[in-house]
Amino acid sequence: MTPDVHGDGRSGDRARGVARGLIPDWLDDRFTRSVTPVIRRLILARVNPNAITVTAFVLTASGGILIAFGHLIGAFLLIVVGGVLDFSDGKVAALTGRVTTFGGILDSTLDRYADAAVYLGLTVFFWNDGHGFTAVAAVLALVGSMTSSYLMALGKAYGYGFRTGILRRQDRVTLIASALVLSAAHDPLSRWLTLGAATVGVRLDHVATVPLAPVVWVLAALTNVTALQRLLVLRRLAQGEHQPPIASETLRDRQLRALRDSIGRTSTQRGTNG
Image (cartoon, rainbow, N blue to C red; front, side, top):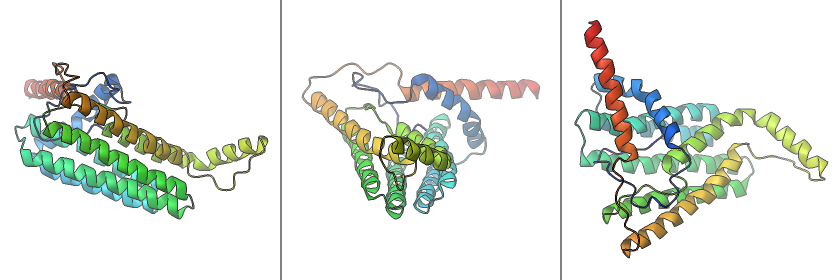
């Protein structure tokens, strides 16, 4: 789920030498096409983009609360719907000419609170489940997530627009959502792990929820790696050592172009049929 803002969106990719994230462009394009009907309906209903932003936050934060209480499938549903709306708010604003500076600020702020709710939910869940180390890993993932987002915003404030790093926000949300829904298979997976460990003489008494626990550890590592990547990129940009030109078409530009084409074709077909 690609995050967005109501700002001008021309973040570009001035540090294209750094990893661009886990989600490839073709998969992002497919996701954009899949949510086009949602964006079209929001536009036709004249929904305020800021209302979409707030709704996305409420759903995602509620998903974090459900995680804390162990309702992982319910959390998955809320986080996915919240992610789709979070992707849509800036697109609706751009396609309807309602882009505002405050909208971008609101979107970015609520994204941080939503992320915190999810990571804190994971922390509480694993702590209550008796896996303190994984709970600590969730806290580390929260720190890495906040720091990497802050560094990108800080760079933009100094005029260095970029979206680089091995784990962007859409990658983090996708990993968490996938792990939540696949955790429904925890019981057979944990039995398989227990039996496999027993064959090599290792006893596993209580396996942390899989694949959610391994994903939390991956997030703990890669969010902080991303923060380091962005810090190093900012250092090179600030010292004038790395100044490639901004890409002619950013990811957001491509998404908006695809949405305009799709929504425009649909409107034309409706007019012809009518």
